Length: 311
Image (cartoon, rainbow, N blue to C red; front, side):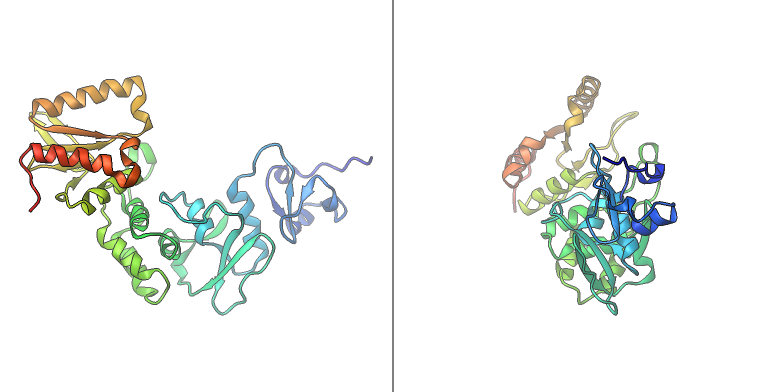
């Protein structure tokens, strides 16, 4: 059996267009060998033992489809949005083109058309993609209001530069509001407006947002979100949620809190709250099932013990 010539090094571990291969000196015959798959016309993918990076699978699709950009569920995944988007893990790469052009139609592609302003298309890892704000709006039609809020909180969140290498949020509130004003008739926009009304700048994670909303829908008082709270001279803590009047702090604890060093820090934190006369309510993933009923019950009980009662 004839052994095919090796591909150029930069084509051996990612999908590529046939034009890229021809430009690199690969022959037409070489592109027909069985070590290459063809997920869509004019695209080749080397058969590897490991998975290809998702962005590398999307990039050639946008290159062979003129005036197109990754969008909808594909952009949702590429941007790493939190929240539950129905169908986001189903096969098919979503791309969009301007409404004056034909809808993209090719194997493995879910095509869309729409009106795009210049700042609604950007680049990510070398491929064209709808902006974070536009992706948020495009996906709103398939999400429920609370999950749209989860993404909005993610976009509005003030980052921690020492951990993330950035100091500005992904989006400002007025950017999301402008996105809604621009596309006032698009499907899902009413849900997006309601979500933006309950979005919050301070929430640090998707579980925190879901917890905050669950407490809101249960009729509990509005909590401060990630506000530095002075517990004593030189002792400042920043609870996920704080009920200052009742002196109740609520912390959502993810998997990282099982780390031995984190356990020591958590004990010290709880002692700080106790010395200051505060009650610390610790919430974990197991409290969030069944619409966060256990979490709501824990927080309600702590508030009632501190004198709160529903009006």
